[in-house]
Image (cartoon, rainbow, N blue to C red; front, side):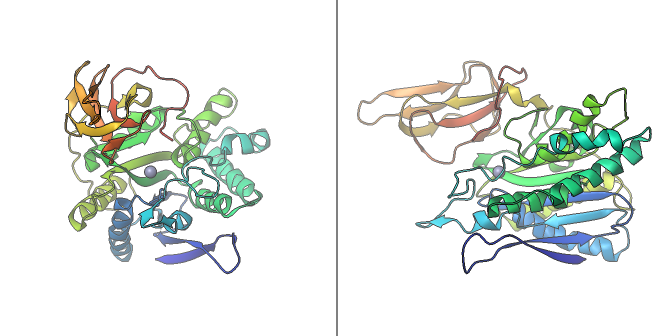
Length: 373
Ligand SMILES: [Zn+2]
């Protein structure tokens, strides 16, 4: 195992921060997996999963069975880890700019597109190597004016040339679910099976350039852009955001099992010279991210949930009540389209406009920005 420290530019006098990456297996065979956790810094289940992964990968490395490089970044957002206000941890948005830590990653396809006609040819593997080289060169030349930008660029440098990227998050209260791109679903489906994913949400463009899409989108966009001209694998980077249930679901047993599931996936994708573990059934078919109905409230009050997380609802079924103890009014929020309740808010007080829960339906009906703020 190699441990590398990546200092971030200092934002304020007298402080310093760094990203620490751990590297396992051979780095010279042209195959690479990148795994990071807790990009939203108050989402801790993945950090514990990374801790188990570090132990398992170290063992696999010493057994000599890793057939490609695995890069692990357990603490991907040291800036957000340090944002505590009056005993509350605020790890989703940077306090200074208000920006979401998982948005606004560099658009690699746009950055490298002008250079590609000069370096691409008829060999799809050589083209993949050229694209990865162009991305690294482009990132090396990107200026970082703030520590937030430096953090984003550092993470992208570590991830952009990987074949597989796994970004470990969690939701407020949720079943295990994941986000990936439509063209990658066949590659991701085994991970959904091993991890027991209960909802798998697909989109080619979620909006806002989150980390996973910044890694994967480059490939299927460039493959379309240069179609008929140069062969490019649309799945050159199989990137997935895994939501490891709810924020409070941090336990040794679960984290160990989740880490084992990720190792099983790496085995399935040929990164471990050992028998592939049998694939469990897929618990629930993939659905479009554009089919997710946010259950919003127009009124304020106490939230009383009417169904369990993971429940499958029919159109018109109740999701939650909003109780106003001043007027005695009870407002029932319903799922208008039906589907699986895969996530809900952790707070039990609603302000008008809040999203109380999200329901994954089978049919796409939304457009524009598909992710929550
Ligand atoms: Zn997150």
